[in-house]
Image 1 (spheres, rainbow, N blue to C red):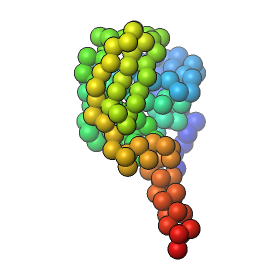
Image 2 (cartoon, helix red, strand yellow):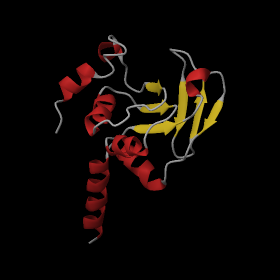
Image 3 (cartoon, rainbow, N blue to C red):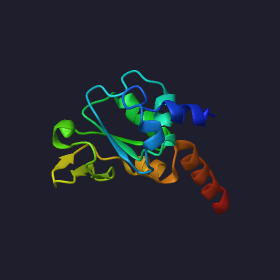
Image 4 (cartoon, one colour):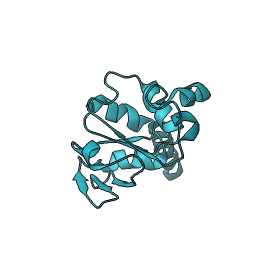
Length: 141
């Protein structure tokens, strides 16, 4: 378990002091190169607990994608994304197809999430996905 209020209050505060108080559920964060390099799972938890639904980054470690997914947060890598959007633009993200579309209509192709990864996102976290799968197996027994 995490100290949720503390994590939420610190999320992106160094870069955007107003972010913790102003972030709205469902927002998609666009990030630069080496996003969250060598971070811990608490970083992904803070982002997800703040209401962010996805992060689209220029680049990041594959370990971040896995850590974020375990918290129910989609992280997609789309080189060139920061040059294609401005603050306040709307993005559509489809992890299952590996697509990110900007409000201007530009589409970026990313590595698609596997069906198992999509199941984790839909469940809200790895733990919730595993609990659901276990419950389904018990129901079938």
